[in-house]
View 1: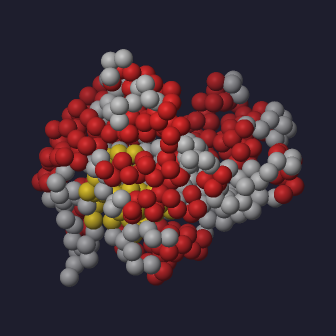
View 2: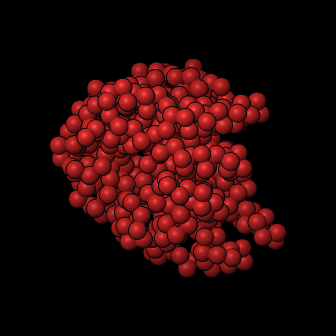
View 3: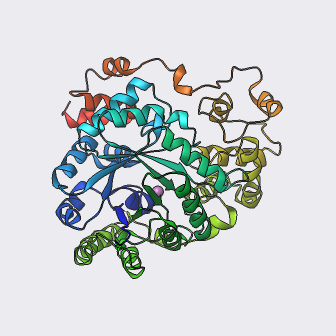
Length: 448
Ligand code: CO
């Protein structure tokens, strides 16, 4: 029997999140949903990540309504969301009762697969999300955040995969958010993880630096079961490898692809028009569609490079750009090599900029870095030097167990705070995620 490769289509979440800041409106893809359902995808990533925030902040759409509508049209295809573990869809740790309720409602409103990750790969920050996902009957897919550093070796990630399987994950994803996972490294990684676990293995990479398609091909050769791709008009650049292309490579290799190429062509026609519209109205900047290997040269994500560039430009310190880039690996080492993914990428970037601009390292330290050093984000990949830690936070208490153990239940607090705005449990959770934005959004929604 032919080896089967399944596909997760990202057009409704990561593809437009990566290319145009998650601004795709429901009304612009509604007419494609039935077609998407005929294509043969294993799942469609369509919720979570930045879609929730974008819906209420920019698009004036209820995210819960969005997932219900999507789900009602996808009869044969699983819906998938991205969840930041204990941070849910926000940037701070939520107490367990909020995490549990959020997952309960996500599943109830139509999410079939929840891809869960933690920015530090601290598995303790995944515990509640994994158990809640399983409790409410969805697939718990746990993602390993891929990054490059002295400690992030194939052995490190393989051990992590083993730990994740033991925690009860239904499947594992290798999440290369920055598109810096090189093809032969991907091959070794998949091979090694395969030797250790039998649960389905999926790969998520980006074409940001130009590697994505090749990396997927090598991962397929090495035994990955599912790949993340984007229908061609929204593929490439900071997005993902094109669905049609990977489908054709899978068939060329002699593997079985469940995708229907005629339906994919129709989908490409549909989203080609959507893309034209977004380019014309300026929502989709054309430069996002070009690969840029700089991220590989500096080993930092492309998004972090452009953030640093903008930050330094606004501070009129752009002449220090290269010095700041050189400071990034040093700060990262001081902090125990956190993966450069949100929010760590912003924190490491800002600290590096401060260190260079002030002319003295750690003269100025943002509160987020202090919180990190107090253990509030979780465990760093390797231990932080105690002398360094004390030089920043003195004798402050340092949390060494699971950070959420220190958070009191807060669901009732949110219910009470939102009682004049919220008409459903879903509204309360919207409020809990983004209180300020939710106030305006819910007031508009109910015409208050
Ligand atoms: Co991604």
